[in-house]
Length: 418
Image (cartoon, rainbow, N blue to C red; front, side, top):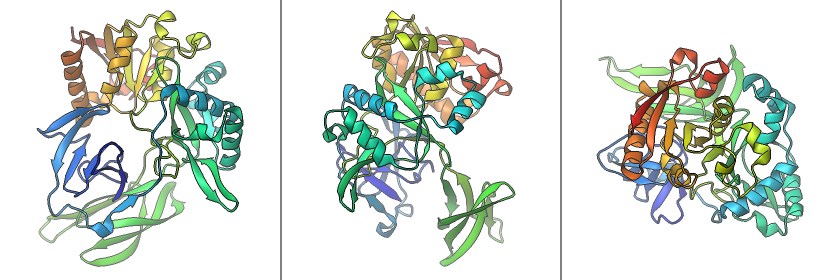
């Protein structure tokens, strides 16, 4: 289990690998004794609300507590994240130094159906896989001093042959800017070109990926080391080919599956020297229709450009951009369906009276999403006088609202709270 110490929360660590409760990465935390987990996805009767959503308290079974030899604590001399105005200044300088590759341009044109003008206004970029130190050096030239990169997630200091130098973390991929209600770029998500492979295991088995191999029949595969019943062996696993072991009495023993990891990652450097985590708090994304973008000045609240009495909410930055253009409404793109507390104060500041939730069409069939919806309704009912509605559509018309509008449809809106 990989852990990273959480600043301002002594004795608690962010779980960088799979959470022992929900099996997912990100959001969850564990205490120093490895006996209590704060999980964001699996509900219990004991919970508390944080800026990133509701966290549920789980007590680990003594048999689930990891051995100290299995725990890797990521050590880094990280720096607290700077305020939004500083992040915006650095990130806009970065946007001037980065390009958009032809590969990502064609993705935005053909897969996302954006026109070239919209792509330019939205400022999507490509995270290069080489010469990142040169980009960092040019960003510094646009600013006042090297210290301007301190506290800016994504940048960190690397020790080189001739001394330390600034460079950039993260995998190569399409960069999506996250904006505040004042049009400040406060963070980036990367849609990685090659998502990492992960092992998903349950039961009496442990394992790790040794190396990825050439694809087989169009599927990714990897050489893995697995340990079960005290025996260590090497096996080749193919993506999505789940292997399940049962005893002679048909009792479940273990399962193992090779899956593709997350496509979207925060551009962050909290595990690097002089880097900074994206958290504290995690950014939200506020999107206006593309025709508004040339007239939206940094520091300007959006209600001077568009009616903000009704605001729509979905999950994801690029999805919010797409839907805002189609429905011609301001949109919030949450970093996760449970992160609705992030936007409470911004909604109040722009004078919102009616919130429309536009989560994916599987909201009624996926327990985690349905739970987040119920908690969101409860959260707004207890803290605001805003009305709340749900945008719904048949799954056959598209999973997300971006798919729906690409297929030429609009959602039905049903009132949840008056």
